[in-house]
Image (cartoon, rainbow, N blue to C red; front, side, top):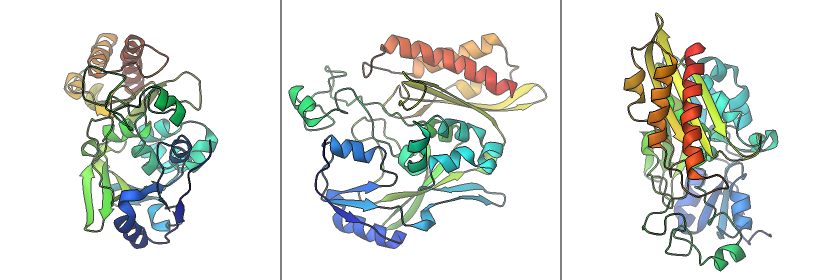
Length: 327
């Protein structure tokens, strides 16, 4: 499948990039690593007149420790750099573990943390060629008015499948968004809407520029577990991130987040309260796994059944909680 025709824009500064966005936002797509956008353009999911290439903006790259205020990560920082950062591995290990599971080494060399946060939601009926989608009558996410996953409703159930966002949710990360009106900083949990077709709160003329990892979430033990068909390359069909801090043998604080089983990455409600102040054992880990399984809403979007994916969320959560407590 060939790419549609487009004009490539290559700004050298963030200000220039925002200027292009403000001028062409209605018919423009942003490219960072391109690992998701280029295949989608080949499938004719996007046919923009302009493509904005951010790779030559140095201020959007790098991992920077800030005295007593945590770590800032530029949105264009590659997933390989996240994976191999000694600073992040020491202070925020759940993030490096999640980054290491993304696709293959070649993809991680190109893919960026900002791109993984902004990853398009996925669906068996949406992520196909134009000919295939036309034969199915299109879908509510692209060119149609029916969700083939849940045909009885009006909501798009395309699933979010990024690996790093659940880890970032566990770390209480914030993101910086910049547009013509200036910059704003919001918690990552407010970045996602929970809708498969309109899944982010960012506006067409805005860019995600930085990720903030707070000092208060540093030095937690962290674990990420991922279910996929193949041992590499594939998107997650279920993913679980866990962070935990222990004190005197008890759990002082913990958080659990899921990906690939809802239209957005989500924190498991009640997990922190269930774990806080407790001594870890099999029964407690199993109870948290039950909470996670009730949070997961997998539908028929892959070769695996929703029932199997929900059960694997339960199993992976139990294993991840036990592993985090053992670190």
